[in-house]
Length: 386
Length: 252
Ligand SMILES: Cc1cc2nc3c(=O)[nH]c(=O)nc-3n(C[C@H](O)[C@H](O)[C@H](O)COP(=O)(O)OP(=O)(O)OC[C@H]3O[C@@H](n4cnc5c(N)ncnc54)[C@H](O)[C@@H]3O)c2cc1C
Ligand SMILES: Cc1cc2nc3c(=O)[nH]c(=O)nc-3n(C[C@H](O)[C@H](O)[C@H](O)COP(=O)(O)OP(=O)(O)OC[C@H]3O[C@@H](n4cnc5c(N)ncnc54)[C@H](O)[C@@H]3O)c2cc1C
Figure 1 (cartoon, rainbow over the protein chains, first blue to last red):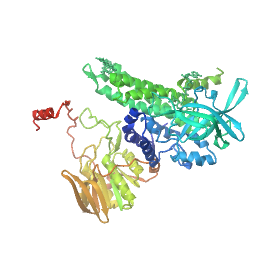
Figure 2 (figure 1 turned 30 degrees about the vertical axis):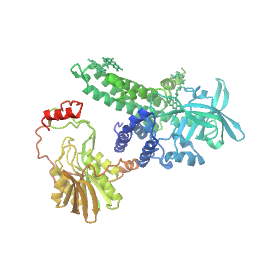
Figure 3 (figure 1 turned 180 degrees about the vertical axis):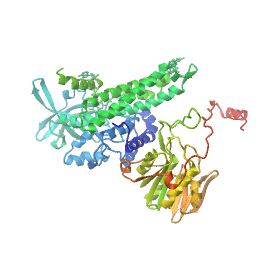
Figure 4 (figure 1 turned 45 degrees about the vertical axis):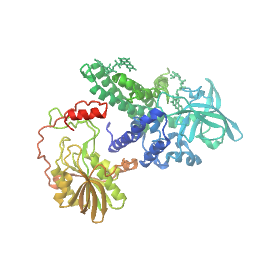
């Protein structure tokens, strides 16, 4: 067993860290203040990432990516997690589900996404179907050789910048002993396609500038060529490609927690009350001890689950553990840091209040903490018949 | 032309330096180390010379502890072609003095025969600002220090130097030792493909003894102390008040 990073991994980490510190941090206040990323800034971040060969580094070399394995990619994501998501969005990492593209889809979606020419967004969630993905109401029905789609998706991240969308849609129902069960198909949908509209979403307290949108389908006609994977095979593509992306939330949480922790540590060592540094009071110093312990634990748990994927080992349970633990760790670390800062922690003069707000969504998206606990406990109890 | 770039592993410029309790130096245990920022500028300049077709090979060399290998990998990831590590100490706290470094570098230069040595003007750890100058003296080569612009033209180089009064432009004969200043260029990030390639690039390992140099220290460090804490400042409400305060302080 080896817990150290290789020379290459060290360099990947230090390059991405410097990139985030120099190209992302300086623009964060602007994004917070305006809730927008100016498009020339977005393009500049994208261009620099492309120049550095980091764009789509999660894709294999044969399609033009850098071919990073899960562990190395987790290191990249961890460093990116330090910076504003609205900005690091342009340090592009297209959904690796695009590897399911076949034939002409590769030229139209996969390769342009890897080259940074077209951006993607992924749409599963609906107003009536969040955790219960299969309960979706967005439906495609056969009409001639085409599919006709009606329904609504919401909370779709990055949709404002997306040129195309990977959308999960119900394409039928099976009657099973447990009741009706929907069949799901993944479709590729271009922005501007007739019958398909992208609308502004809600204002979120987390990640200002990283917007979510509503997608509306009204008698939207899609040919079979837009099906990603097999018809009714939506859950197969989801299971093949999507569960690895949950590591992203965990690794980004670890990176952000480390950035936040450095503020806590410095402040505890500098701020004086009652004639001494507050870090000398056990009420503060023990918080520091707990924080770093939890951060390290989450870090190792996350990297270990990425490593399992690279080894071809089953990792579903481990990824769920990493996701729930790292996001709850981040909630604690940001809250405890804010507490150490006292009143100043709440003020926008420091980024602490932002870390604290941003942390909130991590326990919700990509599967809530409850759903992760469900995955973990089912994987242990189902084999025992419970 | 071959360009030799000496790079030093130093405490990262972002790290808050702590003096060891016994005052014998700075605590380097578990501290982030990086390439000396001025050396990064030198590496960048060498790579640009290669990209401009004025150099055909960039060789990075580091003299120090074994861990300096990481620093060399960074130079390779930025675009250097190969690297030489000269191990001259075992303890990370040992700082090899400029004269010993210059003597070892002379050995490397004799072997490698570069047309140009590009080094940082100083290392940010001990701020000696001496190695490049000493190397040029040992070699009997021309030297151009504190470069903010370097223009190589066949067997001469025109170098703009940042001197106290402003900028000075000099022309030196090649081969030469040029030490670089902060404003010469902005070093690039290592690209991902270059990071992946760096491991496959050759890295030779030598020792100080290979060059017949005794690298043991000749200077005795008497004491290292924290800089004096700065007294808190005050805010002034107007220019008049500022002038008043400056007069009180006896500076105007
Ligand atoms: C800012 C933001 C961006 C998003 N981006 C995207 C995106 O790009 N694409 C996309 O498809 N989706 C996206 N989502 C949706 C996200 O994945 C869902 O919000 C999440 O899956 C939860 O669904 P829900 O909000 O409808 O909550 P619900 O599913 O309605 O859950 C409500 C509560 O009930 C709990 N609950 C539900 N079922 C169970 C159960 N079986 N056992 C115990 N507790 C349960 C939940 O844990 C939660 O606490 C985004 C969400 C947000 C907030
Ligand atoms: C929105 C807002 C409105 C306010 N309004 C008013 C107002 O109207 N009037 C007014 O006078 N004040 C006001 N305050 C100030 C408020 O009462 C202080 O913020 C609070 O007392 C904490 O002080 P501090 O922020 O300086 O934190 P600090 O005292 O610097 O504390 C920093 C951290 O150190 C911890 N700490 C400090 N000493 C110890 C110790 N001995 N042992 C263990 N831990 C310790 C604290 O618990 C905290 O976690 C306001 C603050 C806010 C945020």
